[in-house]
Image (cartoon, rainbow, N blue to C red):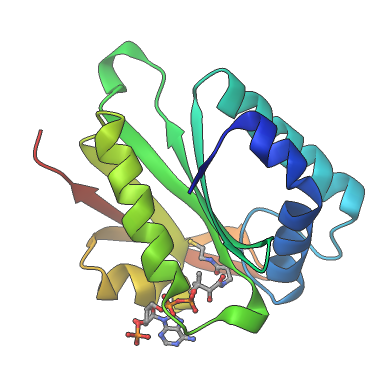
Amino acid sequence: MILSADQAISKLEDLIDLLIDAVDGGASVGFLAPLSREEAGAYWRSVIESIRVGNRILIAIEHGGRVIGSVQIARETRANGRHRGEALKLFVHSSMRRGGLARRLMAEMEEAARAAGITLLLMDTRKDSQGERLCESLGYTRWGEVPDYARDPDGTLRATSFYYRRFNA
Ligand SMILES: CC(C)(COP(=O)(O)OP(=O)(O)OC[C@H]1O[C@@H](n2cnc3c(N)ncnc32)[C@H](O)[C@@H]1OP(=O)(O)O)[C@@H](O)C(=O)NCCC(=O)NCCS
């Protein structure tokens, strides 16, 4: 489901748990470990502000009333790129993996992208990661990789792989 800004606020603690779970598990999603609840909360509040102004779409999956997976679309706001979006911060809680939830999130994310008039989606992920295997298995087009692009939560520099998917306009 797509979460509105108010729905995301009501799920803030779950979203914080999800982000900390991913970083604790070594995922390269923008943060170094250890990630405090304050820093994770500040991140989600900035996402919620972007949802409010229409620049971000947040898709979440719940289980037993708790958010256990999410992904976002960052919409390009410059006039010549409004057909473009970046899929980012795909997480499934570590206790719920390999059950197809990321596939479901990606399908919902693509549906939301199309509905928003997005015809080009970009996505990047750590090289040799579960995220990379997912992009490959979903048939995203790999257009390159950059060495030493981002640090793992433990500080190690790693390469990032870059993908895109086009939809018919
Ligand atoms: C990547 C991630 C979202 C996958 O979530 P998931 O719910 O376990 O994924 P799914 O069960 O939907 O798997 C979809 C496909 O991805 C690939 N995949 C996912 N995890 C994998 C793993 N551990 N090993 C090999 N392939 C994997 C497979 O192709 C899988 O299809 P299959 O089960 O038919 O073989 C999850 O591992 C995660 O949250 N990781 C931490 C955060 C992260 O790295 N996010 C990616 C940043 S873009």
